[in-house]
Image 1 (tube, rainbow, N blue to C red):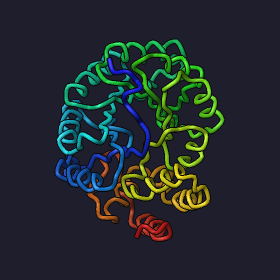
Image 2 (image 1 turned 180 degrees about the horizontal axis):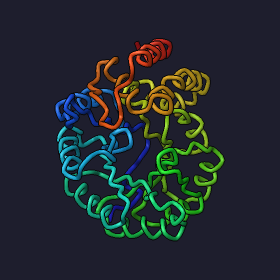
Image 3 (image 1 turned 45 degrees about the vertical axis):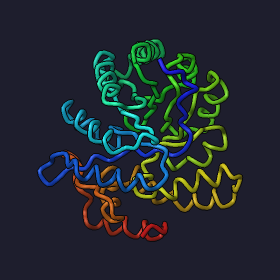
Amino acid sequence: MTNRSTLSLKGVFTPLATPFDEQDEFAPEKLVSNINKLNQTGLNGYVVLGSNGEYVYLSEKEKMEVLNIARQVIPKDKLMIAGTGCESTRNTIALTLQAAEIGADAVIIVNPSYYKSEMTVPVLAAHYQKIADVSPIPVIIYNFPPGTSIDLSAELLVRLSHHPNIIGVKDTGGLMPKMGETIYQVAPGFQVLAGSASFLFPSLAIGAVGGVLALGNIAPLQCLEIYRLFCAGDIENGRALHLRMLPVNAAITTRFGVSGLKAAMEMLGYQGGLPRSPLLPLPETQKQELQTILKTGGLL
């Protein structure tokens, strides 16, 4: 079992998009192209099969294919974090073991959420502990209230932080007081990551070690620069860049979603491909709005 102190989550990570073609099939060559391009940017690593990777729409066979291909093109000096969350503990463990065998450095696990009322602190604590007990690689918790409608409590995160194989949390909730409470109370060495560029800068200010940012798919250099400026103590320029990126980040997340992210990738020279059905490609009118936002943000 890896000691949590040996795997640093400091820096900027990008949750990779999974490109699909006109036939709704996974397009591996597009994924390879994107990773090769992003490898040149100084990103600290990638989340493969995250929310932006449309993992909920992939078959188990496709998940294995995506992980295998990603592992081949992600260099060893960048972390490969595999999304292995399933609704049952048993299936999550199975996928976690497969990801470890493929060569993932860590797994990131979204909490089960279908039976919402039954996802109590004891249920979720037992779920994560059982996985972490048998996982050969470190486990990161993924708190994703926009997708699960459950916001994992600071109490639960603090409890789980004492497991030696649970090394951190990606928090997409964006509630600064709760994030601060978590950072203040967790076990030493437990790492908190901002789950969106919309609150990266303030998260760093209260002790987050980095971020897993959808924005990194289209503006990796800007994300890295926000992180660098904060670390250098240049609060004024860091804040200015953070604020300039807010409309861009909103466009590819809360406003236009995965379809917007993929459209933006295409506009900026990446291989976004199409979203998988039932999601629809971004309509032309919204593409024009998106283009304007990217220009205002200095990306186009």
